[in-house]
Image (cartoon, rainbow, N blue to C red; front, side, top):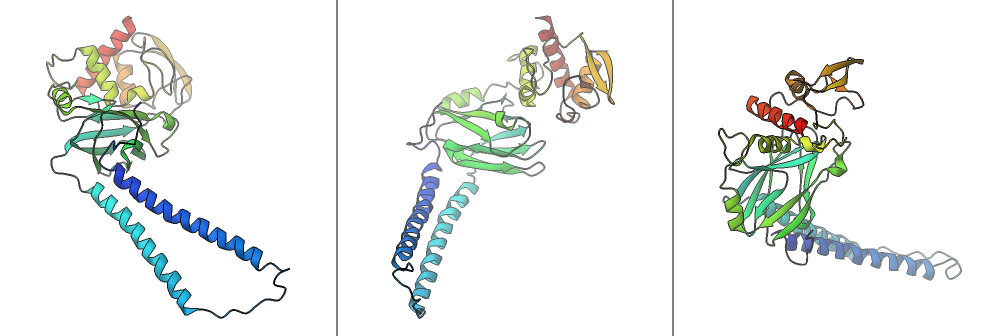
Length: 317
């Protein structure tokens, strides 16, 4: 993982770091100075050296000094912070748009050509505009090496931008507690040469594309599970996570809880449809209710068909 921040990983690094050093330096200076004065006066005017209290008249000069100087320092710190914030809010018109979707507990990224990935790919030396969308609860998109962080609120459109100045891989985190697997909500941003990014985004790799020869039905199913963040809670190899695995799911019977009562049902097409559109109606025994949202208005009929083909493939292995 490339986390070397001695060189600018994004266009915001030097500005944010300068503001931090400036504010931290002032704070540290006054912390040391005030602490030193306190220690000095405690020793200098301790009872054994100053048995009787001495009356000291006030000083208008001192009052003015310790009012004006802190005001100037606070305003200068505000200016540093405000100028950096304003620069980050002014998105360049030619910035490349990438839709960033957060859900419990994963990020997915959709490009203009329909390509969907669970890793963010961006070109070196070009501005990128991330359209942030939260589908369920509060999330926060955070790339420490780029010095960018933005809360994602359901129903509220937010955007952030940056320009990557150094090729490499950098961590993406969710910085807002969002539930049971919040600590697993991580991804990567890969900064690649501009020509590689252009070649990648020229191919129509969307699983939604009709007669798309780039992806077969199995790859389309994988793309859909990444698009909707299914891999955050389900696995394709039989491993148990928050939700049951879709390995060997088709045609098998399973025990589910319906209104608190156990029922044995067959995992057929109708069951898969109910599991996606009404996920809390039938809960597989051993798993918790209420952790999955309905995808009724999100997963299209074509996507559902491709998911079925993918599940059939996993059940035949």
